Image 1 (cartoon, one colour):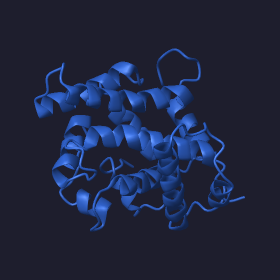
Image 2 (cartoon, helix red, strand yellow):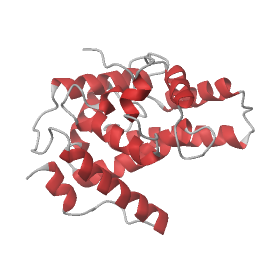
Image 3 (cartoon, one colour):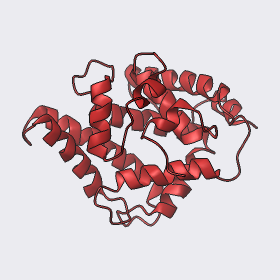
Length: 225
């Protein structure tokens, strides 16, 4: 059964508590269906491909802010602090708390599903296993993409206008420590506004696509081979 078909069967994750969450889940479901139709992932994939494995390793290294080889809550606090310094925010400011909450939301979701032994650390092996899990479970993938999008977008969108500008994207690259080339923003957006919905689509491509030319592959800069 194809990944797309299984997504269409419905959502079996946590029940939504309010209309906004339901609408967000419906939006990403529709976005994922459209995204999957354009990618070479229509059939079940038994193992993580070399390209997708390279993308997971790349993202792991980006998240590993202190370079100690494991992901911890401290790494995501450090990422929030990088943004706060770049924006000149005080630790008591509401905007700083919004940054921190968004970054820790990403950590919380990762830890919930990737930290197998519950030691508060995520190894590369656990990250690869988590990635394989979510790409074979459409309901969990949908849930994770919605949650990760909310967390990352909350950090990225500095003025809360619902659109990621070119400047915000390059600030994102600088604060996470990856190199974004001048043309990356255009490659990612393809002439569209970089909205939450487009971010969800590109994040889905980053996780799922096996095509080297998928725009979502450049979301976190060039993926090392």
